[in-house]
Length: 102
Image (cartoon, rainbow, N blue to C red; front, side, top):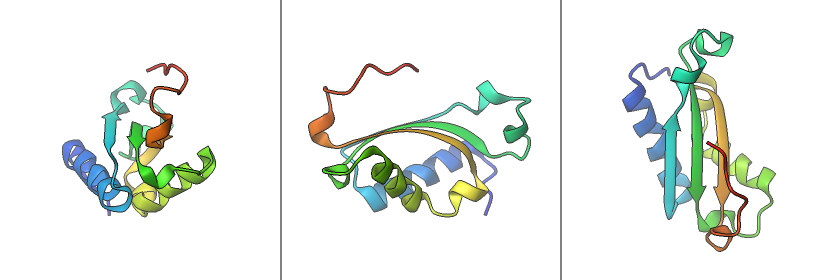
């Protein structure tokens, strides 16, 4: 299932994340415009940056947190998302993380 409209795609990604992970905070930005001409962008899938805070991540290592995000997104990772940069935090991590470069 490829979602052609980028705005609808963002809404769909956010909805899946909200349903599965009940985040206290979510920021999802489409960075596809930075990758025009890139081979991965040729098929129409997007490049995204995600910052998400959820109690679901409490006690999990970063790899397990990323796996939870991928599980929540399901088939969108194959059909609509080419690249996803993830910053997945538990509420207790907020304010203690390293400064991020956007």
